Image 1: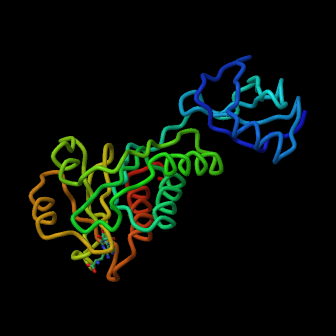
Image 2 (image 1 turned 120 degrees about the vertical axis):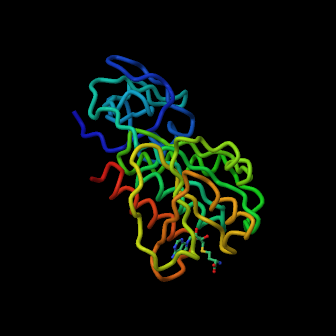
Length: 240
Ligand code: SAH
């Protein structure tokens, strides 16, 4: 039996003997790029049933079908942490999505603030990045990437029981991650232009908001996202 190296995210249910028809892109990758044929082993996960070792029962021009044999990892959900950030340049936004998946978040929410650099995002492309990151980092869950939403609306609908860690560059120098509760949380990272005064005022007035300092220097938004998730994971997440 060959060793399974390739991990693929699928949407179908996984279980003993379950046959899974792979997408055209996955088929092309397995047969065209990786040159795998019938009987080759792959690893499959769907965000619910853990990771399964499967072997290719069909691998040809008309598609590929993998049949599940045994579970290789139990399902593990990342902590219930949302990453909310104002999208920046394409490559840096891609980086934020990729790193958030690797570091472990439940949901990724691009938000439009007053000074947000980009008016639009390609949600489908960012979601595909999240899938790829999960496939390569061994995660069994792919966080949903939400569509771009105005920050005002996100704050208006923000669940009362969720702690919001607001990364405020104006707080630079105060001690990081003081107190706080584990459980449901969200991190908010602003755009290159920082938060507008009206936004800062609104955030300061919210009950479940905690200001999070990321040290004495001003970080770029992509660095700030990685630093904030790391701090939260160490204090409250699944790294402990
Ligand atoms: N132009 C802004 C900085 C924006 S940095 C200014 O000069 O004030 C982008 C985002 O990263 C910020 O909105 C904030 O959310 C986060 N950030 C960067 N450095 C930070 C720090 N030292 N502490 C807390 N948040 C920080």
